[in-house]
Image (cartoon, rainbow, N blue to C red; front, side, top):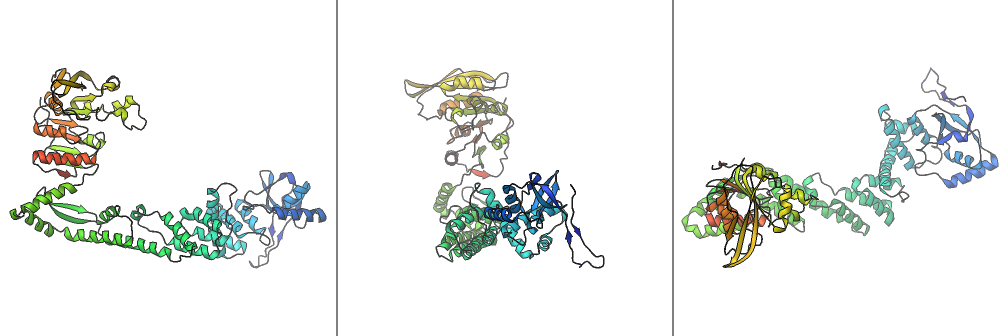
Length: 584
């Protein structure tokens, strides 16, 4: 079959000569014609097809108004006349008059609209087509301006239709198949102007409440103002919830509801921006009797202090902002020196003691922080944390693990089997010459089968809470990679031990310390609790590297050590310490 191309009649004398598109009409089998998949994206008009069937049945198919097709893979793709094609096919036509044109994919997309330009193109269909054409023709440089010129429409209208279509496509992709979707361009255009996270709920609100054009514009303008470029603010507000609330209030007639939130956000942003990112803060520490210098980010301080404020209203934000400014004024070196002179004066001894008590009470013990307690180091975190393990001496004399207090089999190990739960502590034997593990009686066999640490011997402790009445036994396994270690007996008797609820009696811990370490040796305590082992290390001249995940227990440990030793615990940024050698 011959293919007829459009042949424009162009006079070489002038580019403005009127053009006539000559076309040859041929008969094409209906069975070889396929509808273009991007035609009628909003669906075909069944009523129009029914009307056309009546006209065609009465008058016949008008060959002076043929279908327009293009060759594609030895078939014909319909680019103009879908409603007439469907009507005729339903009536049983086997061939239909067609004009066969040569066009690429982009031109075919444009033809879907220009072919119906004088009939029933919907604005949204034009917008959807424009999105497809511009995207497909991106490499060819076809702009919105070019597209508008092809259709004989204003560029402004085309852009409006494209914006509406962008919202339509997204909403269509998020809603169930067959769900009702707005097709009104001006409403979809207002939706598109909002943040994409608001498109679905706003669309549903418009359809549910059957909002007018004026209401949609008012809501769109109001909720677009509820925004910020400061990422720190997002943690305090659910912006989607705020916008939804504003929309509902506008529907109820509260026209100025959004201004309260705008004012709140402006107060937050202005306060934050006016604060220094970095200041040098000086403070006299009564406990350490020295002036401490610290670099403070006032913006971060402002954010952290706002987290405890509820409800977060304008006056509360300004109050915290005021405190931040006061902190800046009171943190000068001169102010710290005046405080130091005052508290060092013996006349003010009582006030000094009271200040020390207050500072102990207010002492913040935060997760992941290190404290220096004389020669000892305390890590406020899990003893299994890599940061704790990396700060330990290369080789300590002894490490202690109390599995009665915290049985690995009972911990949340993210699906880890009991076998692997025990093995996660095997690293201890790499960092200590001797490891002692106290294990619940019912778990001894499972523990010994699971652990890969080199077993040396077992030690049993016979415990009495009252003179002459033996109440319980404690089992401890001893491990070491060394060929020989200091010998300890197989049986220890601990008399008059208090009920420790999982903690080992002090006398037993003291026995372990003396058996497996000597003066100034480093030892490891994975779960320090209130500091029983650390205090014994202090009394017996050992150096303890301890970890405790519970913040309150860490705080009690610091207080207990200061009370027992008379020293001052010091928070340190970096756990730099003299790592002692192990005594031979």
